Amino acid sequence: MTIVVESGEANRLRKNSLGVGAVTFLVVSAAAPLTAVAGGVPLSMLMGNGSGIPGTFLIVTAVLLIFAVGYVAMARHVANAGAFYAYTAKGLGGALGGAAALIAILSYNAMQIGVFGLFGAATSSLFAGWGINLPWWLWCFIGVTLVGVLGYRRVDLSAKILTVLVLLEYLIVLVVDLAILFKGGDSGLSMAPFTPTQILSGAPAIGLLFCFAAFIGVEATTIYSEEAREPHRTVPRATYISILIIGVFYMFTSWLMANGAGVDKLVPSLQALQDPTTFLFTLSDRYVGTAVTQLMSILFVSSLFAGVVAFHNGVARYFYVAGREKLLPASLGVTHPVFKSPHVGSVIQTAIAFLVIALFAVTGQDPVLALFSWLTNVGTLGIITLMALTSFSVLAFFSRNPSLEGNVLKAKVAPAIAGLVLAYILIQIVLNFGSLSGASGTLSWFLPSLVLIAAVLGLVLALALKSKDPAAFAQLGNEVKE
Image 1 (cartoon, rainbow, N blue to C red):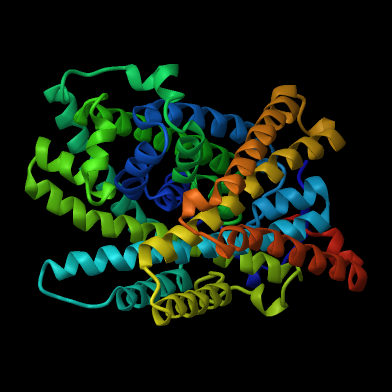
Image 2 (image 1 turned 90 degrees about the vertical axis):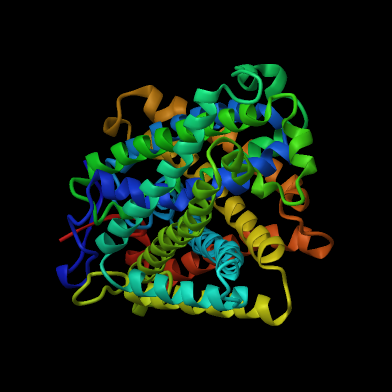
């Protein structure tokens, strides 16, 4: 049994355009694996639990697999490009669904625009080395334009480009991984990073939060459910494959990074670097050579570009669904007559990105320490909020519809465990937001409060829709069919 609502074919996303591989690469690219291991992993080791990060990635991968059990079970009954919003609406009601929709729009916008800050800085640095000196914000504007063009056109075009970029990311990091592996690291290969002693060393809560942040994007498989071929099989497979690919890659690479420096020497080595995010590049110089390091610098920029393309696609689809289901103006809920893309949402997201980047540039903010750090942490907070809501929504949905899922593990046990763990992670992010983001003073509480503000706005919009159009409110989050 699936929950459906009629919709004209003329105003549909392009059906049957994405297979398991395409959906997988769209979400894996949002997680930006090279960006995570080059930027996030060294910081998590330095600020968190040092050599215990590989073991922490193992724990986070297990939690996300538990989350996926209920997530994909519900995906077989609700196929809607609104993803988290749709699941929350069907599980916890339309009012909370409206809150989830606005949290999602805020979160994916924040992630995409924040990553543009790092993209602008990295691209500016890369081209400066070749004698082309342009400000970071100009590279951002060039990137926003290119991403906007891809988002406006067919999604399978984006998927093909991301497939190439992501494969190159993995290959270049694996070259470094294998070099460290075959050379035995600094002083032999140690499994200590997976022991409780290392995992609980330093500041394990901070390490845990960084590791969760490294996976952001992998949850977005259901956003493409309306465009997937056989979505009731494609989305679950892509979800599990994405989590396993990213999780194993992060564990393997961070373990070899720790061994490459030496488990006991890791934190001092990071502390000695002027910029900890150069750590992977120093390992590449040491174990492979400068040629590979230079290529990695180029692919680092392409990794960031792949990430912003993927986040842009997610934002555009949330705008589209919110417009189609009358939470936001109906003009948002239309697709391009030729490309079948959510082109209006794409244009609006592009405009928002231009405005926010211009604001940070005009006020002289740092593209990495401010734009990237502040906004990506807001996005992480919002997305983990949505994941927790979704877990409890799955529990509520199957409790009301027990005939749809007879497996208690899928319907109740896994969603309950995932919801409680994610709620704990959520609390930790709020408590440690200043330390994670580098925001201080008023910003340390104002930035995370943006998620609450978005939730309240979405709740008000949903209740207003219920008042003026009860029939439309009752359809929030339903699956769409011809």
